[in-house]
Image (cartoon, rainbow, N blue to C red; front, side, top):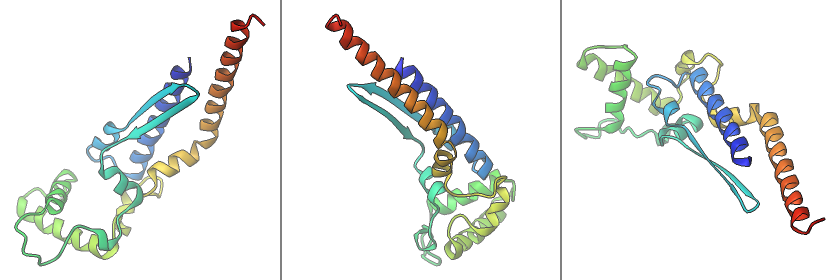
Length: 172
């Protein structure tokens, strides 16, 4: 019974996290949203909800300070996963279709990231709710009353079940 209710809570949270990601404009490919999982366990007076998602979800949640942006202008490196990712982003957004233009725009974005950090001021245009950070904490804060109510219901039922089991065990 408790696991079923925890799974209901997990599904609610997953739906809300996905909605917040979309509203913040973090849904270009949908990979992060699809990667969201919550594993629930219950037993021996303990319950757990453990969330997981693709690694870059933390950077999207917390942002990246300019000094932490993985871009060093004029480094001489022949390849960069960061620049390659930005080129793919430019192509997915259909900002540029040919490789040379996409690469040029990717470098412009990298310089902007290095100056402002991530998210940039101009990236807020992709948000429908005015936010680009805090998809985890904002979702939890906004749903804290519902989370608390569901957890209280679960605890009350679990305590009642355990008391009933004790009473039955000792024929009281």
